[in-house]
Length: 325
Image 1: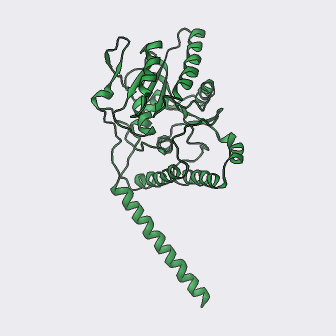
Image 2: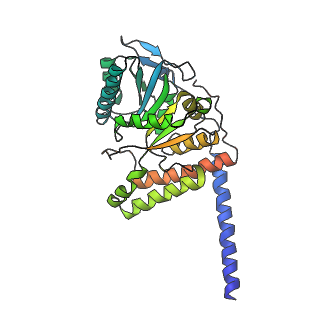
Image 3: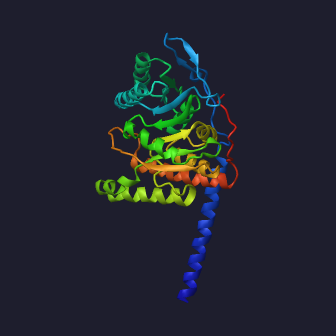
């Protein structure tokens, strides 16, 4: 009798789980925007030149003009941005002095900030010139993924680095991710990605976190592995280097604009069979993070499930032909 009741209970739970999954899949399908958001407001198509004149941004589909583009998404970063920019530009200028043929650009993408982020970035453009530092100010906040995508799709580099505005990763680790990219050669169709990783620091970080935050972290890692990306331990580090072709293919197909965009990006890369290296980098936590532990992790968990379901049901497809409009 007890065994019969237990079987009935398990059957009921299985039916309920199936119903919930179907409902979630339906919500994911109905609420999905089928195409990546590549639309730009007119003001987002230009940057300020050295004389204060408006100049049109180029396209990543154009031939490269620089060796390296650095894309920095920034939302209300007037305080933290100068530290990162000073370190990055000092490193890049030193490299240029050592090798005169080396050409770079830094693109700061102000993601609809309410502070003086744009003005702070423009000060660097005035100091170094708009050929080296350009500022893309978005009319409305798109989320970190949307900001990175908009910056990368107007970049000019043969390789393209995304780097966080907080400077949590030391810019000198650029050499490490470049070595990671080199280790993947020969690149198929010039496609390769090198991801900075904090996985080697995980044991130390756990010792400083609460049990709840540790549980959230492991839960997120499991969902990433189970639903989307395997073989990359740290998908969320904001220090990733792309070949120009890999950046164009992945970011034109990207749908997610907020925290989980890295996961979809790597999911797309693995579907396209783009080789990926994971390289240890130095990282320090910097005050002022925009990530709210519980709610941001909850949103990312939802996004992970939606990513998998939307590709599984076919509402999202990997289309690498998209261009900014």
